[in-house]
Amino acid sequence: MKKFDRISETFSYLKEKNKSAMIAFLTAGDPTFKISLEIVKGMPARGVDIIEIGMPFSDPMADGETIQKSYKRSLMAGNNMDKTLKLISSFRKKNKTTPIVLMGYFNPIYYIGVKNFVSKAINAGADGLLIVDFPPEVDSEINKNEIKKKINFIRLATPTTNKNRLKKIIASTSGFLYYVSITGITGNEIRNVDFIRKKYMELKKSINIPFVVGFGINTPKKAMQVAEYSDGVVIGSALVREIEKCGKNHKDVANKVLNLISKYVKAIKKARIN
Image (tube, rainbow, N blue to C red; front, top):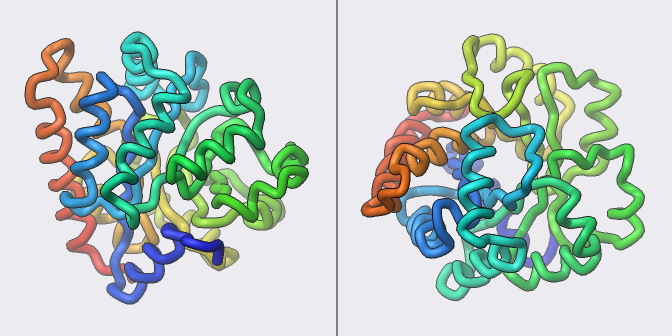
């Protein structure tokens, strides 16, 4: 376990309770820095176990229209990488326990410099990195800078991931493994929960770290169904869509998102892992 490893501590606690983690995704700076900070600060009190922060990027190829629009709103509002990290450091002033994972694409990180970026992310209070377009085959930059010793590096697995590739992914993963429940982009919905459960359980046999499910979980009912077998459930597009629905009228948007989070938390915490 890494020093001050909030992610491992959170999953250990939930395992004792036989509960799945509620992982909430929010794009930094969407719709404004002030509102996104208000939402992030309010998440733990609503029952969120791990917070996933999207780093806005102009070409988010793995994301659907909902997340793409959130990145555009954030960038149009003047958000950048420095402000994304400021969001975390501002949150950390009062919350020292809730894990935060930064999720995004490699291009902005490469521009800053991998070593420099990781140092800034750790200093801000981040616990993990999930770089969508950075497969284990191009790990040399990470290994060279011994990044894995400093921060959890989270990987993605999909329904099409075979056992051989899974071994390679696991070897370069810490914190938790993120299972993409659909073969597609964010925002698409899960149509067959039983199929996802079967595929997940097959892969789970080879995993010795927490294994969470994300993409396509767009109702509290589906969240509860997934929570009955997974170590964690990621809710993203459903929350971001609530911000989008408010348009330019930002009044009470933070409270609306937090109320929606409460509904998902209630459903997830009803489930006991089988």
